[in-house]
Length: 167
Image 1: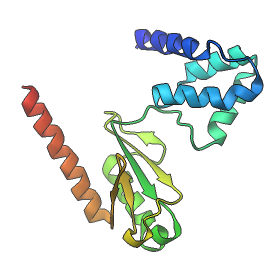
Image 2: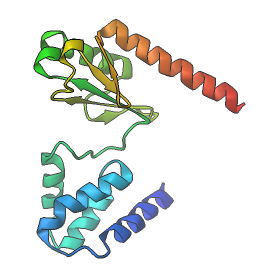
Image 3: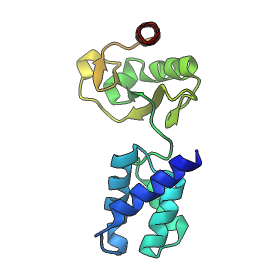
Image 4: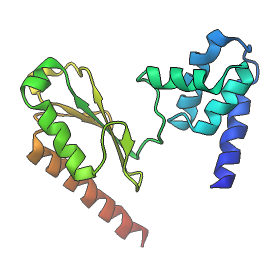
């Protein structure tokens, strides 16, 4: 874990090279860092605060204000549950609750095995297929609780197959 932290700090310093130490660069810097790591590690936010000569809380405030930023590492598989009007009317909340029960995590969280992360989105643009869940950029239509179980079963079977092939 310590080696990983050192690697993260070193990569962050590389990202910061050549960037002007101006407050207005905070969001672009955070975007670059998230692009690199998939989330904003707390040690990185401290590094950015020091780099820009800002209070730590200012960097944290920006990172938590904008929903584009993640504070936890993403899972291997990304789940986005649509909460747009059509999905809401067709049971988007029920779908979200099913994912939460099955994975035992809430929006913005990652499973302890780092297999899945879950979040909500405002609209996917597939209203005719509501309620919709996007798993790894694949749109899953009419994602009611039974469908959620089927999607998870498929990933479980895929993982078991991969484990057998390794052995």
